[in-house]
Every structure is written in C-alpha cells, then in structure tokens.
Image 1 (cartoon, rainbow, N blue to C red):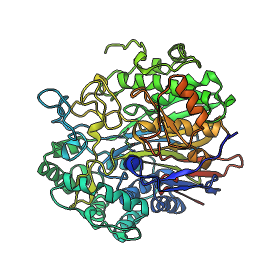
Image 2 (image 1 turned 180 degrees about the vertical axis):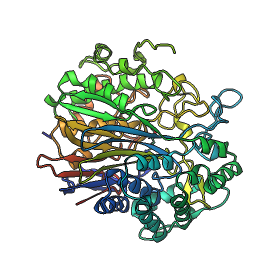
Image 3 (image 1 turned 90 degrees about the vertical axis):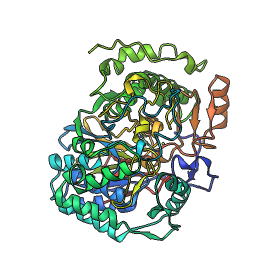
Image 4 (image 1 turned 30 degrees about the vertical axis):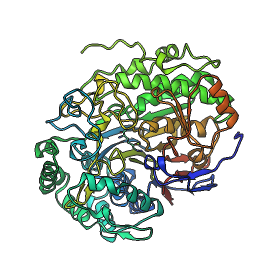
Length: 567
Ligand code: DON
C-alpha cells in the first residue's frame, strides 16, 4: 500500500522543536509492542508502567487512568499536570460510553478584553506567560470524579506509587534535557526567583519532586477538596495573587469536572466516539471524516496527491466552522446536529474540485441557523476486562504559563490563550476565534483535544489521541485513516508522516522531507500553499489497536519518549 518508505525525525518536542536543526534521522520499528491482556501507552515509560501495575493489582482502566494521569504530572512536567486540565472518553467492555471534561475555567474576575491594551490590541505574552494566563485547573477534580464513579481500587493504592515516584525522582532523557534548557529563560521571566527547573539538568540526572509528593500526600489524605478548598487551595491562590494573577480561593472552590456525552458518528463500518464541546475535537473530526467518506479514500495511496487534496479540503471547511460556531456549550448554543449532518457536510464540499485548490479566503463558516436561545499529552489504556479509555491532558504551552509554584511542586497552565482574546486575532496555534469562544467568567476555553475511541462492527477497535494544539484533530484523523483505509498497523500508522490544514493560514503544513516530491509539486500547481518549515513534527500520537487475534498493538510515538507497556 505504501509507495515509499520514510524515516522519522527525532526531535525534542512538538512546538519547541521548530527552530531546532534536524538531529537524527532514524528508521523506526513499524510494529509496536503486542500484548495479550492489557496495555497502557503514554508519554513516559514510568507513567505507562504505573498504569500497568495498577491493572495487575486488579484495578480497571479507570483506576489506571487516575494513576497514569498523576504519574505523568510527576514524570512529564512538560505537559502532564495537576495545574492544568483535560478530557477523557471511555468505552466499557459492555459497550457503554461516556466522557469527562476536566478542562480549565476562566476565573470570576476575568473579562472579555482582559488581554487587550487601551487601543484594543492584543498584549503580547499576557495570555501565554505568567499568572494572568492561568485557567482554574481541573485535573484533580477530573481524576477524583472518574475514580468515584468508575474506579475499583482504594485511592491509596493508586496514589501511593505516584507519590513514591515523586520522592524517588525521574531520570532525565536526552529530549527532556533539551526541552528544559530551551525554556529556562522563560522560567526566569515568569517566576520571581529561580526554580527547580533552572538547574543545569543533564541526561541521566535524577530530578526528585518532594514538594509535589507532599502536595499529593495531602490530596490522598483529604481528597479532592484539599486542592480546591484546603491548604493547597490557600497556598495556590496566594501564590497566584503574589504573581499578579486573578484566580482566588472562591474560583478554586467553585470548580467542578463535568460528565459529558461524547460525540458519536459513523465512518463506513466504524463508529467513532470522541470528545464533545468544550473540545472542538469530536465535532471537527466528525465533520472532516463525514466530508471525506463519499470519496472512498482507500482507493488512493497513502499521502498521494488526491488523498491529500480530499483531506485538506475537508479540514479547511471544518476549521472554518470551528472558529465561528464552537465554544463552551454551557455558554453558547452550538448547532451540533446540523454541523455533523450528512446533508450539511455534502453541501459544504460541493464546491470542491480535484482540478484546483479552494482558497481559504473564499471559505467562511457554513450557513447554519443557530436557534436563539502547541504542550499536551495523550495516553490510551485498555484493561484486561476490555474497558478502554482515551485521555488527553495539558498545560497548553510547554510547561504551561512557565509559572512554577515551588511550594506545591507544579507548573500552572496557560490555557487562557485558548480563548479568542479578540475576534479574528490568532492564538498561539494560529487559531482564530469569534464570539462563541470569547472570555467570560467561569467559561471553559475551546479546545482541540480529541481523545477518541473507535469501534468496528460493534467491538472495540482502537483508542487514540495526541498533543499538538490545532494539529491534534488532523493527527487523530490521519492515524485512524492510516489503520482503517490504508491498512497499516498501529505503530506504522503512528510513525507515518503527517500533514495539516486549519483553514487559516491557508497552507498545508507538512513534516519536512517526508512527502513525495512529485505530489508536493502537483499540489503547488493546483494552487495549494505548502509549508514544510514550521512543524518539524505534527502531533505525538499514542494509540492501541485491537488485532484480529484480539491481542493489542501499541503505537507509541517516537517523536517523543512515548512508551507502550502491556501484559
Ligand atoms: O486544548 C487545546 O487544544 C490546547 N490547549 C492543546 C495544547 C497542545 O496540544 C500543545 N501541544 N503541543
């Protein structure tokens, strides 16, 4: 099926890597870890191992989710967090599905124009660096809600290994050494004094996290209220105030994670289950896949001219809708059913032709009547009972706002940048928003996170997701298509080169030097703008595929330190 082979770029991280020279070109294994009973795939081996240990102790996928999420907060401070938030969708062995939103919220004192100066211009850095950028964290509320509703093991059994990991410390990888070094100047800018992360950490050093361990111990003792109403809440609110932010104890005490019905839709004989708003992930994925479906994409080769055209044109139209219609469903009316209806989406693609690129300037959001009224991390888990989860969690940018609370031992997010600070003004991912995603007290900012579970013929088929800001949706899309339409295995699908279009800017971003030159030349002739410079990597996908013999293949992205562990 594949026309050409490719090598993968080994680089340090998703966003930071843009300016880095190409370090290693290496052919990666095309088959991932295969295991019979259960699997966890995450950004760090330590976190995947803790998740698997919980399963081996008799825990289920939800217990393992809590353990893996919190272990990532220790082992992967770049994106793993208790100072951020995320989304998780699940499918139980009996086919029941659900989702939880533990997305950050805007503080009570936030205002629509809080990131604009007196001339209504966006103040550079205010929504990305330091205390004003921070949204009210949701992770602890999220994992406790999951544990309470769906977990089996006592919380001590889950938190104790994580606390031990924080005391014992984490060995610095090559990629981590580079990442920390790259962001050190920003850590100094965001914090009043040097933090743990301003030391000169080298590969194979061990970083210990006693402050985080103590915070987690208090959380273990007092439950989620420790973070939102207890001593931790007091320390956190004081710390944010001291650093010029506006999150108060009241904000923390009012935070709740929310159970939400996932978006579900079909694509040929697949049923896709993905996150609903306030993530745009599920809606956009549904729109793109449904726009692609009539073209029978498997008749074309992977990453061939026509396959790229169909996917790009569907993406362009979906992202235009995203920017206009999507926001926090508790605040805005989203015409969800219409946006993902076949009738509307067929109409949306009706002006597409293989002969010529549609220009983004000629594409606006579609006409739907509204009834009045780039760091993140993903992990997938399948347990020995057949339950599956798919979770994506984030601080937004690398190390979030760069603001590190030394007393509590964690970074705080810069999720406020995911709001639209000003209509038409791009955020750090170049995404443009409108009124639907404007800032308001207690509102959740729109996300692109796309934790997704796929069923085939009514049975579990895949759990998949990725970081990557605006490229999350398109990376998840390509991974599903790689497996299903282009007949790849899980690891091969994760390895394959990716591209991305998000309506504006009007360009196809491609991982450099990995695409067929003749296809690129043809695309240019047809009026497509190609950008191979700005994204050394697109996404960092982790997934689990159910193989024909019912064993699991992990796909752990070599673009990071991601690792599958199973038994
Ligand atoms: O929720 C979102 O869409 C963003 N905060 C995700 C950020 C991200 O993926 C950064 N990673 N590269």
